[in-house]
Amino acid sequence: MQQAAETGGKKSRRSRPVRVAEAIKEWVVEQGLQPGDRLPRETELMERFGMAKGTIREAMRLLQAQGLVETKTGPGGGSFVGEVSAERARALLANFFYFRNLTIGDIYQVRIALEPELAATLAGHVSSRQLAELREIMNEYEEPATSAAQEREQHVASLKFHALLAEMGGNVLLRFLIGFMAQILTDLTVFRRLYTTPNVELWRSGRQHQIDLLDALENGDAARARNVMRSHMEMARDLMEDQEAVVMKRFIAE
Amino acid sequence: MQQAAETGGKKSRRSRPVRVAEAIKEWVVEQGLQPGDRLPRETELMERFGMAKGTIREAMRLLQAQGLVETKTGPGGGSFVGEVSAERARALLANFFYFRNLTIGDIYQVRIALEPELAATLAGHVSSRQLAELREIMNEYEEPATSAAQEREQHVASLKFHALLAEMGGNVLLRFLIGFMAQILTDLTVFRRLYTTPNVELWRSGRQHQIDLLDALENGDAARARNVMRSHMEMARDLMEDQEAVVMKRFIAE
DNA sequence: TAAGATTTGTTCGTATGTATC
DNA sequence: GGATACATACGAACAAATCTT
Image (cartoon, rainbow over all chains, first blue to last red; front, side, top):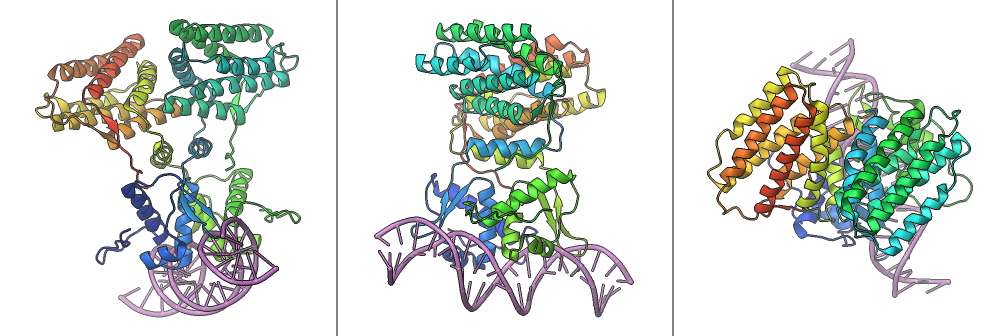
């Protein structure tokens, strides 16, 4: 690792921990380190950068928060290159929207554009094992809801269906984005009209959509999978609008 | 702020800085603090949590890396609630894909699904001022490229066009996602066939697409804007495939 | 301009906790 | 259990930045 290049007399505006964190990032890339690979010890980093322990530790916290390193105590311990988990990436991205009042309409506009696309690419590429898993989730809303609260529960279960479907896709970006939206809708959505009676008609057509979808996926009918999913998404959006759902403001815990 | 509740003898698996960071996050949400609002001083946090300065500072670095707080020295200084910038959110999300070899095909599948949707919603809602800005960017590729390197430059300029277009949209999620993809394609894409001669035909039709797009946006023709954008995206994807473009592996600097 | 006040930034020494052998 | 090798945490002191007077 190169010495912390504090070239010339130029005063860096950034603090030392930030500079150290950036240097370590670059070093990881240059060396082509992989998840699990060991980073130098604290004492070693102190020597190489010529900085005190506290400074180095703050740098490691900066990297830890980004999911780039993990740390273990004890012999053989130390800091290791970490692979950013989907969960952490979702939480970090959710923070971005915290002060930007994301609306249900915003999310559904994107869902309507993306999920039919996913369904189409999945057609003919879903194993019977996976179809069984999807059908199992559907059992959670086999009967129409009898209360608005139960309707919400079913909606969350339905989101699990979509998250699982996303996991089956081959496109890592598409998979992440659909999972992200499902997470937001699951964790951060509140229904403002919890007093309304469940809409049995929407339940019926929603369930039929998913049955049709699985059928199209099984038979490799991409066009039909796409169309069914689009209808399903539009219906879900209508349900949310009917319930005057809104996105709640809170940070997602680490 | 509540005392750091280390209830009973249960050993928390998470380190103290992490727990402090989580407590501060919760506190910000509970108090409904806004960007710019002041957080307690280091000394105050030390007292409230009963922890040493270094521990508190590590907690602040955890929050800083997420873009949740900013810190200033001097009188009137301290830590402040920060709004996560789009730039930081893009960088944090890009880290997620670092070890997951995102392909150009993945990105374009999502672009093709999203950008026509953006174009449609924008039709009739773009001011003449904004149209002028877009046309100005188009001047950067008024003439066909004469080298593969120049062709790449024009492609980057074209991405600026799309990023600017995204900024004009009202959907914060859609805007972010399109901006994110433009950033990846700008910063992380390398063309493997820099020796090939520029494809004048693709340049011509690409330019014509953008002209048609602006016309449709100006005239509020949503359907046409959508169709033109889709054709344009498909053409861009073909160009990238023609050049055997790949996503480079590197962390985006803070 | 200069001095003083306030707050974060950084260091050093020491002690403790934790996992491995 | 004891030795070893790590990170974790504390406390006191000093440095640097920046605002006010």
